[in-house]
Image (cartoon, rainbow, N blue to C red):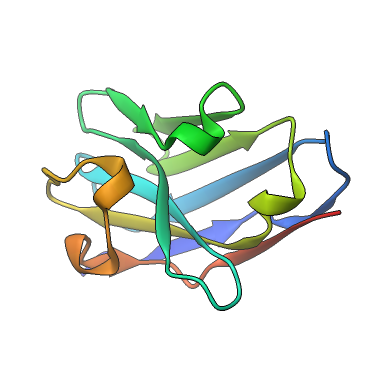
Length: 123
């Protein structure tokens, strides 16, 4: 069983930056992703990183968000810049052995392990 713990959420003004972290309890040789969920909306995939370091982003965050992973620390990161009010939501870290679904089509069912979420509010 893999435990994921997010941190780093908070409030920012539009145009500002926030950095999220996700600490994993197990080997980082997994497919990992960040999801977000706005009130009343479905949880959506935002960014993902494979065990080989290859990354993918949903169109709405391309050029503004950067996903990265420190395998030695078993920690996943999400650097968010040029934040917009529509980036507001609960951000979740997710992990699984692999994932063959495009980022824009990822759902909760595609990942076995989830963190508890961290709130990001942009105004």
